[in-house]
Length: 261
Ligand SMILES: C[S@@+](CC[C@H](N)C(=O)[O-])C[C@H]1O[C@@H](n2cnc3c(N)ncnc32)[C@H](O)[C@@H]1O
Image (cartoon, rainbow, N blue to C red; front, top):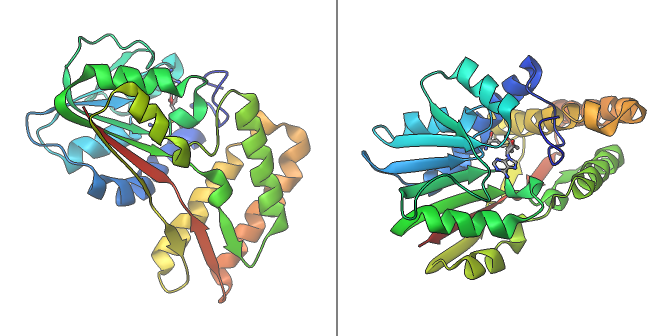
């Protein structure tokens, strides 16, 4: 466990590999909504093992990127795997940067884990230059649906969501972000659902979607305890079996919030 508020695995090889693969999946639908130009200062807040940060540097060449994270273990894995990244330990509630330091802030899958998301969003507004912008990618876990309906998957999803609430987070924070940005003082703000729909018509996306959720569920084995081990095996087998089925549709809706200071 990286912190009390983090319910996935630690930083073992399996979890690092999961985060790297997840970053390929996620950047496919979030980077087209992000923009950053050569020479601009970009903060990757809660950079974790650096998976999204390295992809940001590749997708937006010439940016001056800094990553920060609260977890020493995550940063150690980041430094081991991506020595080229400039990273530092910091709490998103109190960033060690002067007002108006950054042109852009990128942040993925963080606010779902924190007890005081307002403090984070307000701090991001402070470190952005006037006219600078931030992008947060966040969850709405109850939006996961499968056809055919898989009760074991939904049973496991409910356990994941309950564990996240117990840990002080919110597994459905995505659609609730608007008041946080308004209170933080952003001059403009957009909140957009990204409706992901996976069907056999796009086998690559269907495979990536199913693998993403299988690996999320498998990463819960430590935090949910031994009593859920067989449920994880059943639910992930049922999800994987959808790869061979024909009348299949999976949906999930993450949210992308963009604020301009
Ligand atoms: C699900 S991971 C996401 C990592 C990365 N953004 C990605 O998309 O792969 C959440 C990260 O938030 C970090 N985190 C949680 N609370 C934090 C805080 N208050 N300040 C900075 N980082 C925090 C955790 O250590 C963890 O690395």
